[in-house]
Image (cartoon, rainbow, N blue to C red; front, side, top):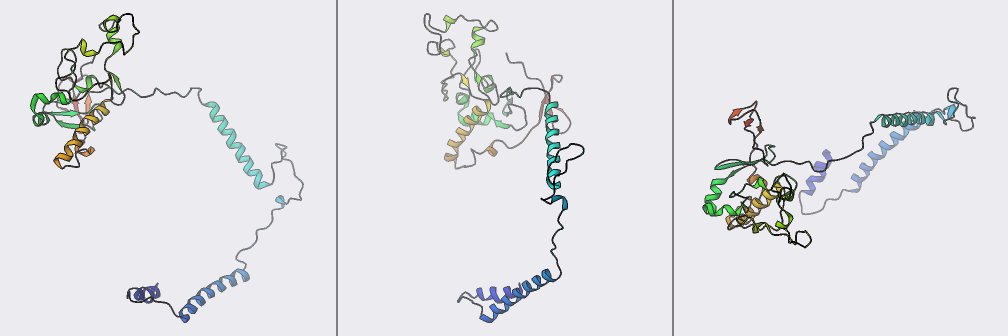
Length: 304
């Protein structure tokens, strides 16, 4: 290494010409390597460093096979026979293990429903649909003021439920990760709901389908909020996660270019903290500290 550093790299650092070793330097380097090879071969040939293993008499191919006194089965030479015994033991143990498994068919329930919890707060809403702590502290009052006051509510709250204004997102987007039926046909037509007759929505004498049905705003006159930007084409509401991300990220993408803030559409712009909450049915007040940094909240009202 010292020769390489001094004699090689030093000459390369000059930069004005290419260094080539002389024939004497090449001969000396080759001689050192050759001497090491000769010394290695000398010890191998004279001192029998690598000796041949003695031949196993049981592995002699000319020897006649001998049957085992126990199994009366010849499994081959000892090396092969041992492997065969171990393989048979493994196969037998695996078969026994599978035989002891209870005969329950593999099944899945598909997507597990994750009901959405409504946002909590006033001027600042804590939006955490599945209460896993990874929510968003949404400055609702600041957004409302920045967008033009009460008239801007329809930018997000684009539908009104009956006898309600600016209905919460969780009223229609009721599942965290799966689409929800915002129309709820069973509730409209079933006895557990309003039990409407089919002719109330479908034209009489025609097939009962989506094409022959009335639109919802024909009965619910104020269903679509005035000034709503989002146009509803079907009443299969997307998941809560998709709806919130599509609405917020879409708006942030537009504002990022106008305000020269390229980080606005990124996750960290909204998801800045984690809060752990618990819904406890036996607690009817706020602010009670649980072990650690958790906060116990009052129960949510049952959604019908």
